Image (cartoon, rainbow, N blue to C red; front, side, top):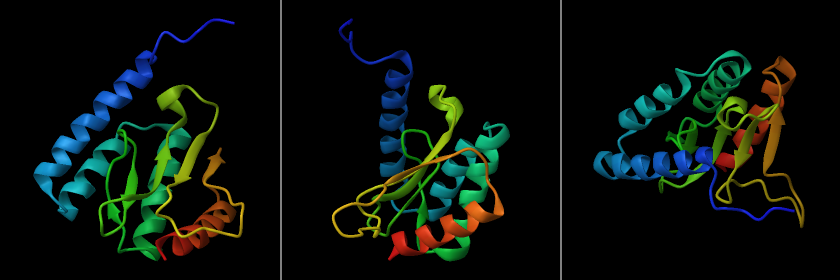
Length: 143
């Protein structure tokens, strides 16, 4: 077994992206328009199912949880609560070379279900069935 030599190139790039985001978000404050612009810019270069999933996430959140504010999270499309804390985000498959995109929910999401509940979902494709299930999760997560 080899030992880790630190962060991979992709991980270093994500950390740099997050630092840049934090600087930009501090300048913009809680400006919804700035958040929308940043998330749209994060979605724009996505291709294939990654783009379909990100666009679907955008539509559903705008519809069922309009109080959530668009905000990037390590360069990925996400949405935050009114305190500026990320509630959910989408990790494109292409970002880290995985076989599926992931939609994740942070601790601020109201998805608690006893002692055990999922916080991330692998998504291969945006389908009507998935959209309905996702909408219910977003509605609950937004509280």
